[in-house]
Image (cartoon, rainbow, N blue to C red; front, side, top):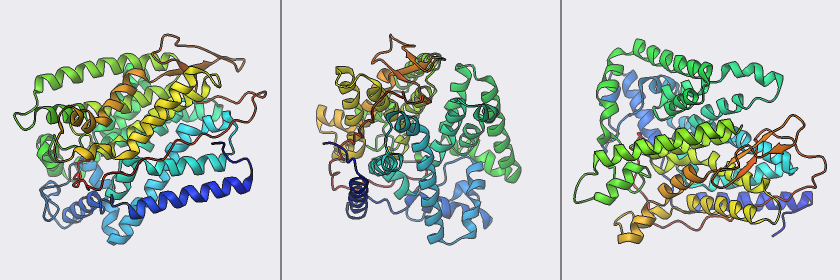
Length: 449
């Protein structure tokens, strides 16, 4: 199917996609009823009324506030507004964060391919909204997209290609530090900065995270003590490890061993160690190849795999990897086997992440097929970690060379390239929409998501 080439055709296509996405979000019963936002709102209100924030449980559940105390400080403004306003503000922040992520991950590709920018962003925004992790983040009232935007703002700074952005480079690490102070998972990006020898940025991130944590301790020392000595280690507060929404290495092991026994901690630890070693090796190679976005994407993938709990809505961290994979395909020779292969895997991964397929095995594992299906997103994460291609580094004359010819899938262009003057206008390829998810509605993830 050829993309439209006229303004009327582009407007019609955009409106049709917007209508389809809106209808899907309204009529397909997958809304999470702002469950996690309820937890945040109730916990912060309880805290300001004199209660201990980690004692709070959402009425009728065993879910409570599971983030570091600095996150509670950031959420304090919610006590100044009503519930409806809190929902509206949450969604507005998610929209702004999504726009930031799309710009960082896709703008260079859009410019290089000479797509009509407003139309490309309209299509990508609709496709973005269809992803299950994005839908869940919005309908739970989660903070995942905000953290993703903070972290990848640092990636954008490190990809500096102008004098102005090189001056801003000294701020790299600020977003990662704030994200790590709000939630522990992004702290792996500080390690990424260290292993890739971005010592200044790592120092900024560490100082910001440490300073924010110290401010939280000053505000409520008892809450900080409770979190770092108890709540942080209590996985019962966030739900069952074997629950199908937990798409981490630990979740896969828990489903494999349930109900006979608990998952082996030794097997989990060995697996985490191997994953971290693979990540460190590949991340260093990505940066050596000049592909900062791929390095950050690999780190997000690894964070999802090694975290004990990775609910489906956490998988927004896979989105940059899909962007890198699709860009790698578009960089390849038109009509070539490599281009078809990369775009196929990018499209297939996208469709699976839209499909809600893991919920088909919510109530039972279904044997070997069930084990494969219930861990579908784990397999995607593992495949991306192992096979994500590194992209070509730009030479001073504006041409490109293969900086990592031994990469598993191959190489593609650096994210900050300029289009070739002789290149004809390219067509915008739109991946297919996801299949209709199963009717069964998953239980809330709790605020630990």
